[in-house]
Length: 214
Image: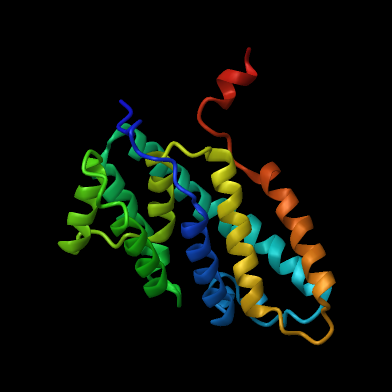
């Protein structure tokens, strides 16, 4: 049963995406990519080839395999009002988020955005999520909160996932692209090319199989 509220005003989601981008910039600056792959830790992002390889690695290994599935599941659980399962998902993220250099920033971004939704009194799942965080039973990781956000405001899921990936990628590159051999034009062209691949990298979304079968 969908628990989303038709009375909730459709927000400008640039605020949460801006926070995602700022967090991603911190990830890039911290060289957090080294946590994902020792191979990429040794690769300086100072050439166009290294930049392209790094972005492809992030898209395929981190975004597609870790972040998008969390956003998607959080979206589904929020729509179904499954609070306990949402907390379980949050706890499952501890396994990989807590080992990342940016885990404190992820928690801060998620909790800040969730706190801004506290005024939606008819959204019990938000209040119970906040209560779980206050009781230290959950962390409020930013991919979980982003999925909840998309569901609460009935924002387009496909575009929301693409925006999440694009904003994260752009933010990271603001943090790491300092190589003298890379021009601004090269960086922007590489970003646009990689962002253009995001829709094709999306997982199957709810309802798509039914649509394709008709």
